[in-house]
Amino acid sequence: SLMFNGKDLTGWEARGAGTWKVEDGVLVGRGNWGFLAFTGGKFDQYTDFEISADIKVYDTGEHPKARHLHRGNSGFYFRTPPTKEKPAGGGMGYEAQVDHGDKSNPTGSIYGYPKGRDPKLKDGEWFNMRVKAQGWHFQIWVNGEKTLDTIEKSQKFGKGYFRLQVHHPSDVVMFKNVKLRELSGASAAKGANSGVLSYTVKNIDGEDVALADYKGKVL
Image (cartoon, rainbow, N blue to C red; front, top):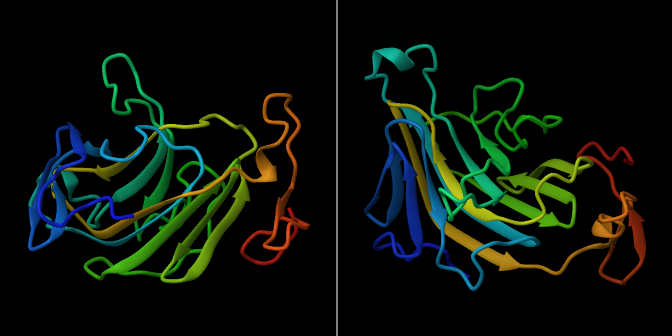
């Protein structure tokens, strides 16, 4: 289902210092650290899902304090927990990274976790990102190519909000065709409460198959 109607910010709630507008059917964020939280779905908080969007980022170079960046920086946050002060997601959750110049956390990674394969993208170009979370099994695709396939062993955030990020004063981030599909949990989530984590998931035939990273190495 579409999360963004292409006309206005219905179903979204701005947080922080960034500004968000709809321009020519595109969701655009500018200027300083801030988020746009999704509040218009069937549920406020989600656990198992597949989400995708067409994204473009760049830096205008107009703000002197951001000269060291020289690149756009955004993120697709998921399972962001609410706080008392910020009911629509105030904690961090997980960030599907959008930063083509970050060598430690390139686009298609989950920020702060083992990095994914760098898709070698350029600022100012549209690309598609798809994020899938089932239990603690997280996968990311960029332009149809898998960049990350991993188990989140720390199991920090079980459910939460979706948020889009604008990062710094001269940052411009753009989203369109934002889509969400709800999923049922996979066997990777079994034993989460007991501290025992399965390293298999069910395939389409209901068989247990071992998880592998994007290089095909079994986890």
